[in-house]
Length: 183
Image (cartoon, rainbow, N blue to C red; front, side, top):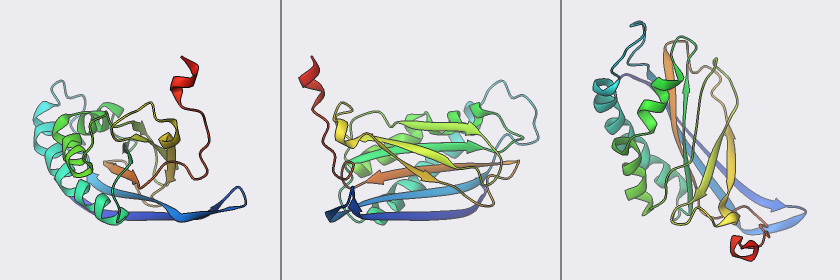
């Protein structure tokens, strides 16, 4: 796995809807820009060898970093893969939609639900939204949220941006009724 760089973003919301958020709502994102392991090979029928080699290393690299950046227990989480223009969406999907990647984050976050994801092919500097859901109950509406990120110089055509996002709480000032009220 060739990593070009790792980027960490944190966001602390102190006010929402004209009201204070106390304590501030914190979200963290850690992104690794890696060389696409299938770059220059044309169509690759069997992605599994590359997935087996890269995905576990990525999960092991990113999971502790995003938890550390958050600095609080994880309540919501998500993942992303943005493939450069010379790759296929399947390249990013293969790396993040495997337990070999996601279980590192599940264990670090003490989570049990599926990780929501975004994956797409895009040019460097593209804005993307990473969806987040509650770590143990995807029906908890207050934790359905997203965080917008972009990398000015990535992904390059032969790269993939792979990221994890974590929130220490639900949306600031969340007030939707529980899903049970509609059943």
